[in-house]
Length: 109
Image 1 (cartoon, helix red, strand yellow):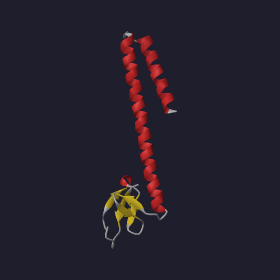
Image 2 (image 1 turned 180 degrees about the vertical axis):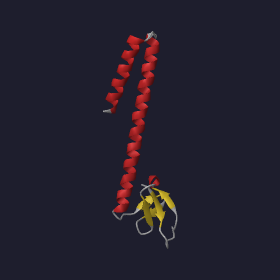
Image 3 (image 1 turned 45 degrees about the horizontal axis):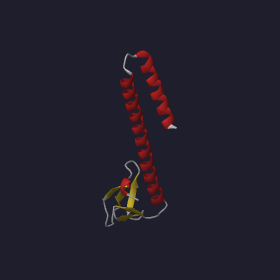
Image 4 (image 1 turned 90 degrees about the horizontal axis):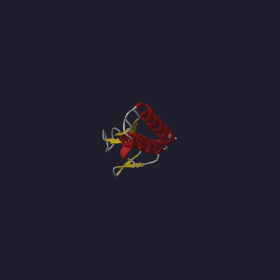
């Protein structure tokens, strides 16, 4: 859906350039192509962020279900780590070998 909105915006801007400027057709084409590429990069960036967030939420869900999660070669589970929701970080619990160790959820599978 975002692609359609992007194309509509580029089309409206190109129409405005056609009627309200004295630029050559080549200059207008370059401006339109630049805007199209810019909008497509923004859409791609948003999709990347959404997939990364979905992956993090999947790791958190798995952790909250009591399953082990692997992060940088370390097995993380609820008996040795607690989850800080504000920063999405696993923090080693007291009286465990991983005490005060911090592992970001984004590094987990």
